Image 1 (cartoon, protein in one colour):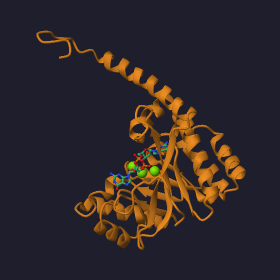
Image 2 (tube, rainbow, N blue to C red; image 1 turned 30 degrees about the vertical axis):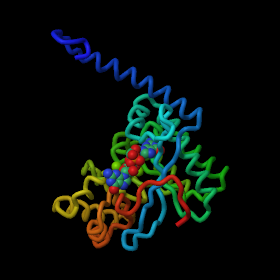
Image 3 (tube, protein in one colour; image 1 turned 90 degrees about the vertical axis):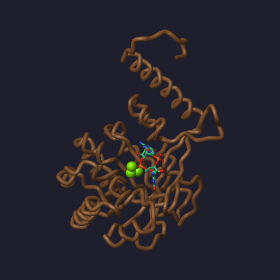
Length: 269
Ligand code: C2E
Ligand code: MG
Ligand code: MG
Ligand code: MG
């Protein structure tokens, strides 16, 4: 259309591909610049005790100050996928881990802070050692740092994730399998992944009230978690009835816009 009327162009899939490579390169530079210019920030979303609604601890979620529009923040969905493809995610995760440990050090009354770690980061066998060094440097008790890895990433790299989780637990950190249940074959792997917490994927929670299958799955996950001595979190809790049902089922913690949004500044609960 831009070339005017009465003309046509043949669509070539490689145009899409080269555009993608270009945008990956562009993101690579943008992320590097954001790191150099200290333009990454953390927001914090409460993780609430399901039965009392009280905030137990927080999850740190990264944002990027938009260089073209410094008043606004870019969400992870706009830069994490590109960062995962180019490998820049490793630098982002390092920055986040350091910032979270520093936050814990500055807020001794904060019981816990969770960070998300990508597969590209935990396939580095030295990461757990680096986390140990940072915790020592800042004088933070390891169990206050909660490491979230997605179940999908953990299953895709079962060798690396097993080793990483074992290293973290030896260190004393809390380990959470994020977005749990998306692949239901996951139960088999729980024997190998010694996580402390299962965070049930929002997909099962969103329509919990109206969907019998979701209800059955959530109950099964909670029962398995209990039997294995693990805690459960439900994400994407959107209303009061869902929260009540989750508490009744026995889910330990709840997170979601109904309870609290991610915010820039927190005080110890
Ligand atoms: P996640 O770890 O599963 O985090 C939950 C996401 O859902 C967050 O989005 C949060 O703001 C959003 N959320 C929370 N409650 C609700 C709700 O009730 N309804 C809906 N629709 N959404 C809700 P956010 O901050 O955009 O992060 C998206 C994803 O990006 C995260 O999913 C996580 O996988 C990734 N991510 C965020 N920060 C980091 C990071 O520092 N490092 C890495 N590697 N990944 C990160
Ligand atoms: Mg998470
Ligand atoms: Mg999640
Ligand atoms: Mg999710």
